[in-house]
Image 1 (cartoon, one colour):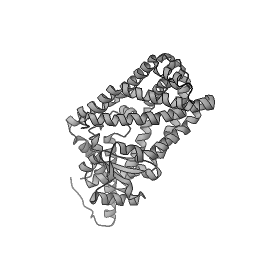
Image 2 (tube, one colour; image 1 turned 120 degrees about the vertical axis):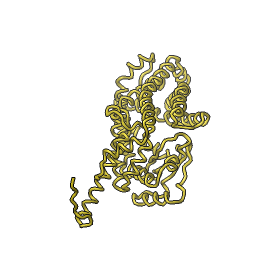
Image 3 (cartoon, helix red, strand yellow; image 1 turned 90 degrees about the vertical axis):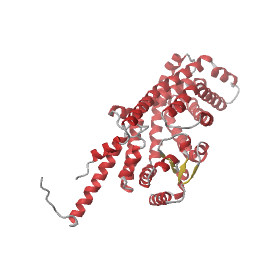
Image 4 (cartoon, one colour; image 1 turned 45 degrees about the vertical axis):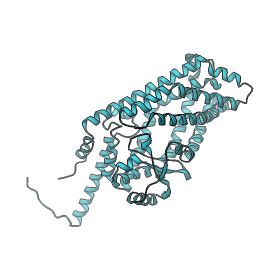
Amino acid sequence: MAFNAQTATARYIDSVGADNLDKAAAYTIGNHWHLLWGLIVTGVIAWLVVRWGVLDRLQARLERRSFAMRAFLVAATYLLISGILGLPWSIYEGWWRERAYDRSSQPLGDFLVQGTIAGLLTAVIGGLFLLGVYALINRTGRRWWIWSGGLTAAALAFLMLLSPILIEPLFNQYQPVPAGPVRDTLEEMAQQADIPANRIFMYDGSRQSNNFTANVSGVLGSARIAISDVALKQASLEEVRAVTGHEVGHYVLGHVWRGVAVYSLLAVLLFFLADRLFPSFARAFGSTAAIGEPRGVPVLLFLVSLFALLAMPITNALSRIGESEADAYSLRTVNEPDGLASALVKTAEYRYPRPHPVQEAIFYSHPSVERRVRRAMEWKARIRSRTLNRLGATGVISNTVVEG
């Protein structure tokens, strides 16, 4: 009987179970609504801080300090305040809801500790970036937004270089994959892709999440591929090969640098719109600040959040292209279509596999699991067909007549 890719795809997706599919749908749709609620929370926090005049008074007190010190401290202070005011929402969205859907077993205390670390990093790194933005506004005139792409590219490259070395180890432990068949296979795959064998790690992703995941991070000498212990514990050797092949694809195909270029161009558009829209939004929030004044940072960051939400269909479309390319790379180089399909099915519990096309186009950063599994099964069908054709051509398979 001929292999049918569509039937095989349906069998994989249905194996998740009707109850789990319903639960995944509810979780996924809830995540989409949370994008809007998160923007509203950002807006309320910005409005409160502006109304309280906290940043106005802080900027006045720092008037004798250098512009750089003033801009950094005002921006960093707002990031800290917004993190504190947004803590109830963060607990609900990032901890309570994740546990309610069995996506995490992280204790609340650990969640808060890690959240505090993340908040401090955001204040420092975000404050430095906003210092650069305000320096551009005040030193390059009305065309400041043109230069924002270069600032964004430099900031992203710097972050990606340092993240695997200084930031990610603050949240998880990274160590070499234990000796054994899995490690031997991964080292062989790394060698074929010219990736140093010491750049493939496992990490304790189960500390934060029960999700089956892996990632590629870093650039140049800091680049590495990391696989969550959740994936390694649950996966067969074929699934590990397929998933690692996918991550190697991101590395080899230069998706990190493409992302830097895309987000830098989007930053130019964002800051152009911010330059034009800031006065209207400042009046709506009750702020008297000009765009070049650090005390106006709540309005500026709300505009950033609003633009990021509106640009989501674009950024997600580009992300889906990269994910599809990485899947194709894995299939070409590793040729584990069933391994890839079964690994993808394990992500269907937190990413509904059968979304409406419009839902997928707007909200999904990855192609739907059903779409990705179908592509893997279509690859399998093509390989089987080519193999049968070659065997038939060499006479290994004799011609037979099947009467109906």
